[in-house]
Image (cartoon, rainbow, N blue to C red; front, side):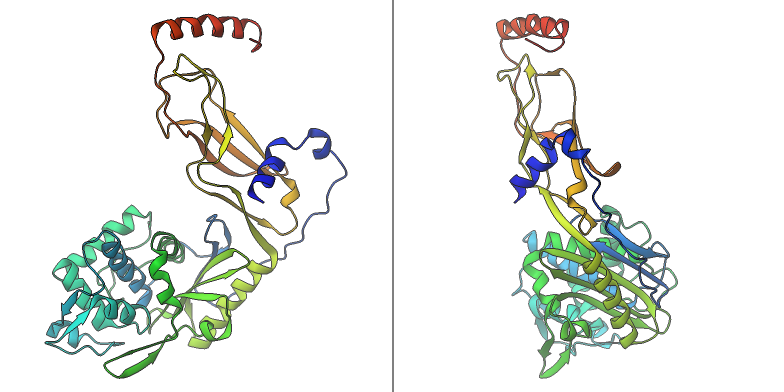
Length: 387
C-alpha cells in the first residue's frame, strides 16, 4: 500500500487532477466539551483535530506522573537503572499524602513495582521514592523534569514536584500533555502496555486503574487520570483503531464520569470523521537527482522519518506531493544533509512539509572527474538540462 500510494502522489497526471471534481467530505463542527481545556491530536502525524484553551496553564494534578514515569522509562532505556533494582523507601516517601501505592518505610521496592504503582495506582509515595532514587530528592528531580520539558518543547509546563500535589508554580497545558504522551508512546513502546493495565496489586492491596474508558472502549489503552480540588477531574487518553492512534486531553471537568464522557466524545469525533495515512517510510528513496563532481553521479534522497498525514475521510484522492530539490547538487554531500523539501497538498492547500535528505554520503570525485563534470554541467545548463 505505501508503494502504491507513493506512486499515486508523485506521478498522478494533470489530466486526472483536472477531471470532474470529487464531492467534498463533510466534517461537522467538533463536539462541545464540558472542560476548562482540551485537545485532540493524532499521535503519528501530530495533527490537532480540535482544541480549546490548549495552551492555558492549569494545575495538572496526577497527570504530572506522566513525566515522572517518562523519566523512569528513559533511565531504563539508557541502562542507568533496571526493572529489578531495589529502591529503599524513605519516611518522606511513605508519609506523602494523597493517592498511595502503600509502600512501607524501611523496606525496598523494585523499580518495576514502583513504575506500575505510579502509572496504575497513581501512587504519590511511589513517585517520591523514584524521585529520591534517581535524583537524590524531589527538588532535584523536579529540575530534571523541567529540563526534559524544555527539551521536548513543552512551553507551558513547569514542575515543582513529582506527584502533582498543588503548588502555585506547578502547571502544564493540554497541548503539552498531549505532546508528552506522544513521546511516551513513541519513545518507549515496550513500557506503554502498563498504561492499559486495569488493576495492580501491591502489598496485598488491589487497586483499579482510574481510567474508566479501559473498561468501556477496547481501543483505549492509556494513559493517566488526575484530580485535585484545584485542577478538577482530568484525563489524558489514547486509543487506536484500524492503525490510527489518537491522543485526547481534557482538563478541569466536574467528575470522574464527566472526564470519561467528554473524552469519549473527542475520540468518537476524531475516529468518525478523520483518517491517518502513512505516505512514506523512513529511508524510502523518493528521487535520485544528478550530482556533479562526485564519486557517484546520482544521489538517493528521501525522508529521515515516517511521514503520516491526517485528513478528513474520503479525501485521500485529493492528495498530491511535490519534491523541491536543490538545483546543481555538488559533491561532497553528507549523509542526512538536507537537499530539498517534500511538500504535500490536499487540493490547493499545503498540509505538510518534510525535509528531503541525502540517504547516502557522496564524496568528492578525483580531479579528472570534477573537471569532466564541470564541462558536462556547462553544456547541460546551456542546453536547458539536456546532456
